[in-house]
Image 1 (spheres, helix red, strand yellow):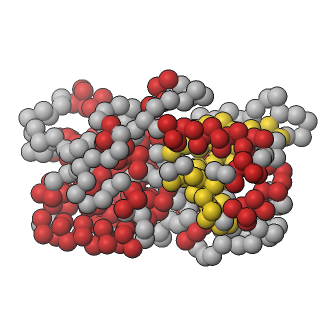
Image 2 (cartoon, helix red, strand yellow):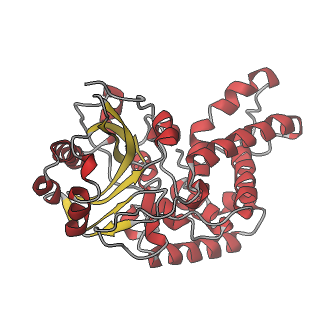
Length: 356
């Protein structure tokens, strides 16, 4: 994450150093492409294509802009090409209304390209840097925010991200998109209006005119030391309470930390539930086999999540879902259980099973 692209045009790497130079931008480019595309795997592919195009075109790079600006121009065009070839990614909540908790059938499995996907924090966020910028980075990869971005036309999406997340100047964005400052400002205003209408603007920490976001907080006794500063104290306490309530399968303790309108969704199925009563009814009804699960904490989409392992026949625990937990203050507002464990557990470095 960077406050703005550097304007020094004199530092043109020599060809022998190019691989290392290009690789140094991989994480921030992956974050940009993830926000643009809504898919961790598509973002990886887009960055790989970006670096390949950069390598092939480097002899024609004259250094009149920074390497970073040049790479973002290529990445933006790669994303535009990808977006032109597919439909908008969604969450279950965007496909229809909530269902009753008594339903036994989760519905039809929808293809991978239907969904806004989770992403590990360490693939898209810097490990250190200005706390305000790190906080903005976290907020701008939240599932709700990324899902709302998918409703913007590609150019508006790029303008919003470059201006409000990466803090580029309007002149720099206009140069990248080969358009005018007036066009950039107009696109930004339209993008802001769309995001506000979808209720994912003011709550994102990315309001127009904000140069700073709340600083990230502290602590975490079940995480490596290098990751502990990523969670604030309130969020850390919520993580611990959720983990304890879920592993004990204590519905009263779980309800105590759920927002009254909390949602439960389970991609790749379209079924989703809303409200504490329906969430609990599902968990003690059709979802009863989750009792006895163990949770392994992960960092996903700027918040906390878990690899969920259900009891396996013959002992131990086997993968069931990657949970990404959305929060609002001291309450959980969404439990997103991604059930394609063959994709998500390796991506998040989770073990193939847990022994007793």
